[in-house]
Length: 253
Image 1 (tube, rainbow, N blue to C red):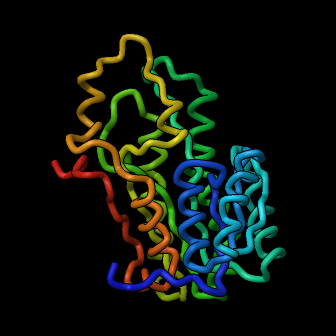
Image 2 (image 1 turned 135 degrees about the vertical axis):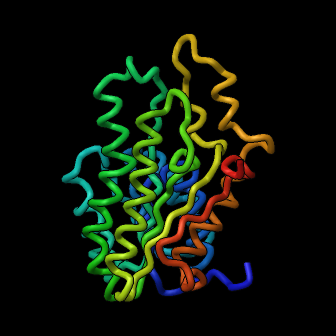
């Protein structure tokens, strides 16, 4: 990228930080000089991420929270501000996918998907925005190719990510005259715990799955982390209300 990603003296809250893209993003932001508040429900994974940040010298605090609980979101932000005295970036990366035939999807899976992928980012943003307005900070939401195209057996996931994309745009317009940036990234498939834990329903037609699998293979997690870090930092100053697609061509046609 043309501009250096510099987060020296700044603080970022990263959800989903115990593994995968959340962990990679936390490491990238720490390398750029940020202090980190790491949020996840996996306490052991958070401890591992915190240990991985040690060589960067960046301060890191962990906060264990189950983001399916709406009452867990605002306290996570309050914890970050209490630990560091400020907040400059909120990276909403925690996510979940449950594959199913739509007529067979359990209500509990639908509710969990919407809670983690859509409601939590809104509630975390709601709590973070007053602090981000003070620091001229940024919100970065992790959407997906599923925000743009229908993906068989992933109705709840598609609905949540499309909702998150338009939430990003709506909030960007609301705060367009304020000193805050609100953007999203939309990755294609990556090798993460989320992908590794994905199972398809019985009798799934895999030729339909192939339609959104991409012809160039998976996206590198580190590349997506770089993009999120750029948008979270002053290097992303020209972006507001944008969704940067990084999917190796899946949504090109």
